Structures are given as structure tokens and as C-alpha cells.
Amino acid sequence: MRLLSTIIIALRALRRNKMRSTLTALGMIIGVGAVITTVSLGSGAKATVEAQIASLGQNLITVFPGNFTTGGVRGGWGSASSLTVEDAESIKLEVPGVIGASPTTRDYTQLIAGGLNWRSLIQGESADFPSIRAWPLAYGDFYTDQDVRTTAKVCVIGNTVAEQLYPGIDPIGQTLRVRNIPLRIVGVLSAKGFNAGGQDQDDIVIIPYTTAMKRVTKRDRISAITVQAQNENVMKRVQNDINDLLQQRRKGREPDYTVVNQIEIAEAANKSSETMRMLILAVAVVSLVVGGIGIMNIMLVSVTERTREIGIRMAVGAHGKDILLQFLTEAVVLSVLGGTLGILLGFAASQTIAVWKHWPVLVSTPAVVVSFAFSALIGIFFGFYPARKAAQLDPIDALRYE
Image (cartoon, rainbow, N blue to C red; front, side, top):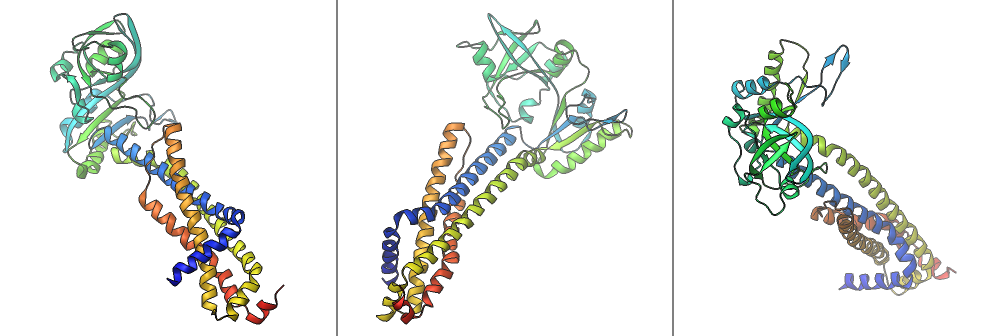
């Protein structure tokens, strides 16, 4: 009951100077709001990246061309490819723990169907593609190993291609022309949406890699090799074995490839966003500390203004600990009110950004709890000195204060 009456008195004292109390709490409001917004955006982005990485497939290992020296010039990912179909076949046959491997070719070109056209990604893959990428079909069937061996003129299209070229029509069995080559559609992939880089994953046409290399692109090298490991526990070992096998096939030449696993891709994608989030969090923490200093400053002013009031209370029987508790409660109430308004501001800002910019947000309950607790601790920490100063006033001097 005593604590409740102390809180009521504290609220009454803060209400007497509404503008000053609001401006003092502004630092806490902005700081806590920034923390909630930053953590919400960071958690949403991280969850989205993890979902997108998971959508690439299960236990995925990818071999990219690049990381080589030719004539003293080093290249990176995307350099001229030296990967071959034989590399992919060797990985599938010779590396223990590999349950699927697909040579991959990529090329953007114009598609024609009836009186419509659409530019899209043409991707050559083996018949293992649906399993490796964990990408089921919405309807129809995927092409077979026999289609790959015979360079069959068949294809499987993404949902976006189906909507653009076959609106209101069942595309199964229809003909799709790619560089004047007629391809028969045998299946439509289920929709996956956009990836973390903003690319529409459904804007794609999958064809046998043999068809892509011999009929469409006329290239003898592949763009990448996608490999599926048996389970997560063997991924690192399989990755090392692939490195060793490819190096053996190159007879000691400097590696002209890069092997990465799904976990490394996720870590790389999260690294830049994590750095930015930490910078913004640092700014938010500084704002909270500045808000705490503001609370200390205003409480010192309040002690000076209410010196006679403190003297009167001591004269009628109040002890130093009662004065200490009173002013400390005022500081904590001011800080907690600022923290509460900051949480509401953080929620509102997160949702506004999500709607306005279409960014993913995920409000973290631990972040809300920690922010609220931190605001209370700041009130205690920065309010203790002014409260202690008030409690140590001499009653006689306080009554004489003008």
C-alpha cells in the first residue's frame, strides 16, 4: 500500500510539469522504439533469409566456377567456367554420402508461345533437380533420365511463366519455343515466390542439361554443379571429398572452382544484415543512455525546486529512506513510461515499414521484455544519485531554502 501511494505521488509530481516530463522521457521513447524496430526488422530479415536458403533444397552443396589464376590474373565466382558434365558425374558416382548431383546451365532468353512472348531464365538440370532443390510440381511430371540421355525437347516451367504465356490455359502438352526450338511442356513447378535477392524464383524454365548444351546454348561447359548430401551430419565431409576429387581430376592444377555448402551461404547472407543491425542497435543504446542522463538532470532540477517540500516532509516525520524512495520512484516511473511508449512506437514503426516498404518484420518478445527491463534499470541507475542527494538534505537548511 505504501509503494502504491508513493507511485501515485510520483505520478502527481510528474503531471505538474507535463511538458518537461514528456521531453525528459523522449530519449527513452526514441531509444526503446529504435531497439524494437531494429530487432524486429533484423529478425524478420534473418527468418526470410533462412527460409529462402532452405527453399534452395535440403543438405545442398554447390560447386561454382572461379577462384583460379590464369596468366597471373585471379578470378572469382562467375569467372569463365571450367566445370564439365564429367565433373558432376564423378561426384555422383565416387563421393560417398552424395544422393544426387545435377550439372547446371543458365541462360536468359526470349520465350514464345502462341502470340505471346516472355523473357525468362532457361536452366538446364538433370532429372535429380526436384529432389535436390526440394521443389515439387504443381501438376504434370518432371522429365526422366531417358529424356536427359536422348536430349529430348521437353521442359518444366515455373508458375510465373505459366501465368504469362498460358493465361487461363492448361500448359501441359503445349509447345514452348526457345530460340526457335519447340519444347513440349510436361510439368509446372509449384510456386516458390521471390528469393532474398528479390528475384522471382518462379520465372524459370527447366530443361534437360543435355538439351540446353547441345540445342540451346551450344556450350560444352556448365555453370555450376548442385549436389545433395545424405544428411546434414555428412555435409562437411562430402564438401571436402568433392574438393579432393575435383583437385584430383585437375591433376594438381590450382583449383578453378569454389565449393560451398548451404550453411555457408546462409552465414554469408546474414553477415551484412547483422553488421548493420548491430550498428543501429549501438545508436539505440546511446540514445537510451542519453535519455538516462536527461532523467538524472531533470531529477536534480526537481530536487532543487522542491527543497522546501523535502524539508517540510522531514519536519513532519519523513525519514531519509522515504525521501530516497519517493524520488527514485519518480525516476523509475518516468523511465518506465518512456519505455512503454517506446515499445508502442517500435511496434507502430515496424508495422509501418512492413506495409510501406514490404519488408519482413518479426517482433521479438524477448526484445520487448529486455527493452522494458532495461528502461526500468536506467531509471534506477540514473535516478539514484538525485534521490540520494535529496535524502541527505539537512531538514533545517531545507526549510530555510528560498
